[in-house]
Length: 417
Image (cartoon, rainbow, N blue to C red; front, side, top):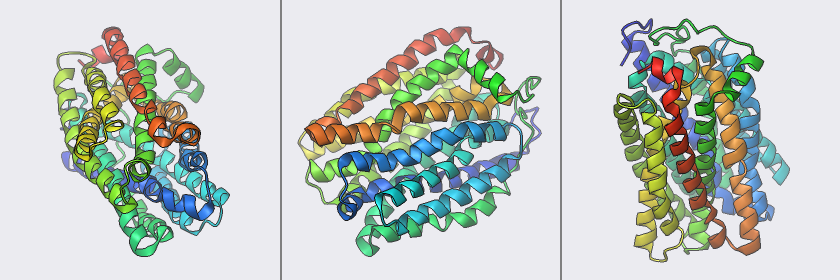
């Protein structure tokens, strides 16, 4: 998977992929442990559904607000050291949520988790792009992003099991503190020269943050890709936060069982969907400059109907089967869309491009989805509120299809074909 002109050895590339994937796995456990215990926090602090949505929002606002800073640093300094600082910060902050004694303290702890994760998430895709050659990145990214469903599912499962056994506060301690050891592991990953796996890396010269952001704003394919990703993130983020509570409140499942159901479906559907999406993206990219984007567009449009059925059917076998199919199709997009983001920008701007995409997709996506759904639930019930999710899925598919049709003229994609 390492390109012929690369300065990265095969062993270093695979070791780096393994380390980044492990960190991403822990990242998503710490991120989704909150969703697994939301009903218990609601009871203890006497919160409204809107306030529950704000707890998820606090993490995301800090995450996307600080991403541009870390993106700029990641395009200039040591990427592995910056990642180690981020992992340490989010681990301590996760554990700190367990000692929160008020809604405000919980908000601050979750915001600190977002700052730590921003330092990691903006850098890791750029590192992967320097480990692997262009037409093999889909599979490498699939391995890396399979940590999303597996880590998310582990967050739901651990949250449910630990809350039942030790209480919701202990859940935050147990999943947060081990991350400190992993921060040391981040320092052992290779940090190759930027553009190490490109056919030509003449553009691998860092630009000022202003110049980089201006260039991104003029990149139509990048903008369309990221806006579609924002709608997708709104849908996926809304489901992730509210699905266990929805199953408990609307469908009558015990909370621990709801966490297990969501976790099990997410890990199986996510594993299959993420790997298949990475493979299809690489195959189609050999035939079409926007192959990765076409995979994302078609999979989102195909997920629209099963997502609607999952939130409207009353039969357990029917709504759980539909939920599984919708998640399979949604996870097909994970690897292709992130490969597209790093493929349509110059080498020296990759961390900045990832940072800008993180800012946009969370500001317009899952940072606002939980409180919006919570506010709608306060007004008209959770059963109706979640129906905004399929609408967002449809918007993402249409935006990606429109952008893919325009991507044929992208010079950056032509250079990698």
